[in-house]
Amino acid sequence: MAQILSRKLGDADLIVLTDGTLEFDREIFPGTDPAHIDALLDAAGEEAIRTNFNAVLIRRPGQTILVDSGPRDLFGPTAGHLPEALAEAGTAPEEVDLIFLTHLHPDHIAGTVTPDGQPVFPNAEMVIPAAEIAFWSDAARFAGDETLSGWQQLAAAVLAAYEGRIRTVTDAGEIAPGMTALPLPGHTPGHSGFRLDVGDESFVHAADIVHAQALQLADPDVGVVFDVDADTARASRKRLLDMLATDGIRFSGGHILRPAFGHVERANGGYRFVDEA
Image 1 (spheres, rainbow, N blue to C red):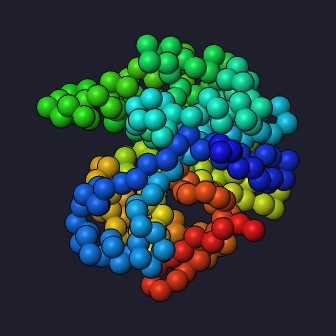
Image 2 (image 1 turned 90 degrees about the horizontal axis):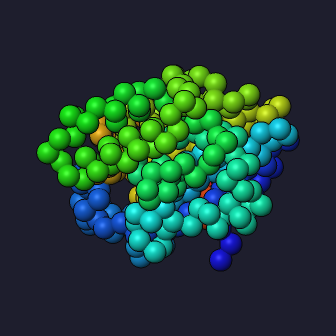
């Protein structure tokens, strides 16, 4: 199966790299009645809570940017296919000039380092929201929680591997020319998407504002266990979905299902994803 999907935005090639897939258990969505989850799945024509792990490659004249990197080998055999996706896109790791990490969860950063902590992308500058570095650099914050402590150690390993070539971004700061951060706090303190403007065309990457497309678009109140601050994440999700639907901006995200490029429109008190023709 092809691992990539490509679109043009002015002089930019936008390529969604599908690192892998997974199905979520209902317990991943605490506070949501399982019967409501079943009803949302039925309305979407889905039998399982499917998700994707997506990275994005942006190629413009003189610059190649990678956004996120997938979970490498951490989430089993259905994921960890970023190297194949990059090869299919005709891009070698050495050609990546800049990496933007939307946040420092394992499924977004593990692909930037080898299992022994070496950098996979030898020539890339790394851009990270400043609040993410502050949050994940505090090991004491996660003491007593084996899972989160492991996540923190991976984040620290990535920061160490790219030491000396990390640049931070705050608020809607510039990542690259025409590309700005889009703060979406709540999932993590520094969680951010990005907006790319080329001429009169725009594209928004929503990062992890939606983990389960069949659930959280139709009902943005559905939260996910991975959110550090569920209420703030919910507010960020509603604000962004309203903006996307109002402005009709092309978008994708870290967990949007193939074909991955589309628009959001209002439907039945919530939203729905409309595949790009």
